[in-house]
Image 1 (cartoon, rainbow, N blue to C red):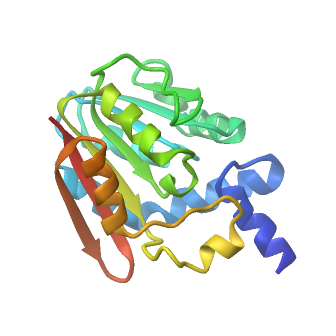
Image 2: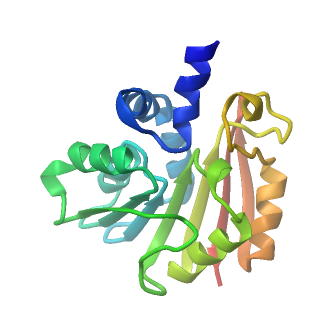
Length: 203
């Protein structure tokens, strides 16, 4: 159990060799959730997009594939994640893809910059979630979309006892937080067994 807990504790901020292993693990295991969630968004060509908590960089790659002539930005609090995301997207790095180390609490981007912001399996670790949601809203263009994708959908999830610093939210709680942050047209989409995508639009 000790090694398993150590491994899953890399979810929040991957570091070292165990963190690198976690990033590879996440790149592949998050694929079904991400691919399903992105279909709901109806990504358009030419969009400027941001993946917050970009981890190993596969969501960035998936966003690029869905939007011709897109610009995709990624940000992650983990230096290991930033390195991995840059490697994964090396061919288009600093041309179509831009990866930065930083926090959801203070996004280093201009107001009204993005058509879409995504957060895949990461809001569990965002500090001061209402403040982070305001930051996401600030950097979205009017009419821009924010898509939160989660697999842990029970606020009493066993995962919170395994992964340090993790807070689990129900989709209903996340929808309420989006409503409170000023997002409109908020929706919950579910897919069995536990996938959920919670979306909102900036007015």
